[in-house]
Image (cartoon, rainbow, N blue to C red; front, top):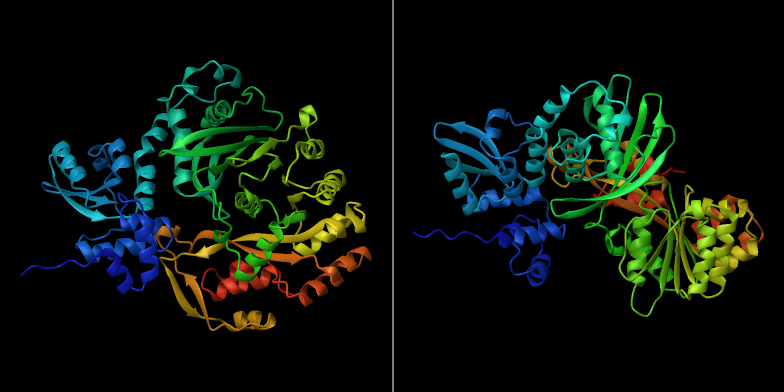
Length: 555
């Protein structure tokens, strides 16, 4: 009797993980040589864990969780690191003449045969997620780097480090250590790497989904070599440790271009270094993928398609303002539009857009650059940040002469931005003539799709929703799994507050009314505030009430 194996797409639909429409769109758009599972993952329709569970059922190969697996370190000598990284393989255990391995693609028979010939073992396979395998390779294969460095000579004077070839030699332990730290941070989807010198050790921390996590602690004597290597990569002065320095460099991790912004800061125990990771291959260029609610997205699209005026995006550092600006510019970018930006620094380089880097050392400030931009016949101008009265006045002048101006401002919400601009000394009549809209934005963590479960809402949560005129019965919450590092959250999404400056708001600005008046007008015009957008995402099962209350106040 011939057993017919069900197709992957049919199994996913039967499991309720995929709709017919999503399957048909994916099959139609994906390249011929791309596997269906990879195409579905790329579009975010399913998670890797969901795909593995369905594949386990389809092909009968078990899946294994590597998060707390009891590995035998001796087995890592059997499978070379290069092969493990290239083919996504991790050796699990040895039983007689059998070698059990975890693979991201257990149907890759060529790799299995190569492994059998090179090791002499009969190969038994299991499925594991790519993230799980990458974390394991980073954790176990790279321990030898630390072994090499643990017994180095005590700290070397920085003046001597400049002459040492090992800071440049790609095979030296310190170079491999820095590469491994960056590679590990990228694989864990960190946004920043913190190297914190302390009295007796150096702590490496990653910011993942907005939260700092300690990755490892290194001996104090490794501090000078580590900092010197990073400074060389960023083209900084390695002998200068008394003043802050800023730099930038690019690396390629697994064939992906990664841009790193580098900042040093003198502290009591040495220089602290922070590296901001800018993944050039994963920059979001689609407004629809930024987390805008349907109403807010329509309001924002109407505003950015106006021929002139100012649109401001407000929020603290790290709230995703730049991503929203770049996505808006990407939508406006076509051959018949001249777009010029002035930024500090230029984070992502966009094709077809003229981008200027601020350089105060030669007098190229936001205000000076903006003046010159206006002589370049622009249609759309993006100013990285409005910091002072001079910059905002030139931006207003640009908008009044027929240009669309996009910029950011550091305030807590959209209403506070109006007060901030008035405090800067901007004339109210100029503000009302030029300001079109203000978008407040924050980033909140998503509930992990692999371990998220429905739970009844607590009485307090019901009261919070009731206060905003909403109801809630169930809350989606993550219990913690290997995919989310036991946090219950994985990835982030933006919540927004789009304030349209209508006639009533303009009248209040001209009268320099109190902030409470601005808020009342915003409520009257059905503005969706940050707290409301966040609670709506809780109802949709995207995040939790705790996450929303962490960044938005309930009134």
